[in-house]
Length: 199
Image (cartoon, rainbow, N blue to C red; front, side, top):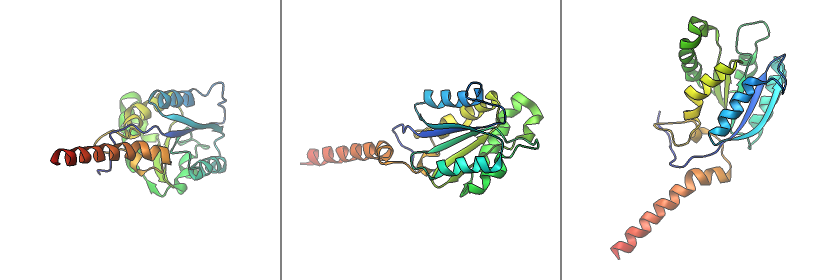
């Protein structure tokens, strides 16, 4: 389970996608929750979009973001239920190189106290695709708060122990320097001080 945990916070470039047949930029409250949360945590909004609940439109947008080296994480809200047009799992699971089954399991566990046994109908899911983490959650603002506050705030924090998702992401040069370079410089400085002391 363990992986490299940085002692320095790495700001991530996060994309937000709202899947809805009715939401617009003016009333996308769930997307607003995610944007507010990620920015308050010190991350950056890379891009934001709204698409209708259509398999191919979702897949098209997310595929482009997965291929974009400037996007580290994709947050998708909506389309995870059981109604006729809910299609986010079908649209996006085929893009995953690895599935993070624990995300949906933990999300449903956390939701139990708010919605009771109805949480069993949530098909929240997550996966890793081309070095990009994709998290899919229900379309309500409360569900987005639960996902961020209960899971993502810690798992997208490079300093969180014993492990977090950041080491699995494709990071650009600046982000890698933040994660690794400062620590390496600190280690080199300590080694140099030891050598000088020995001399």
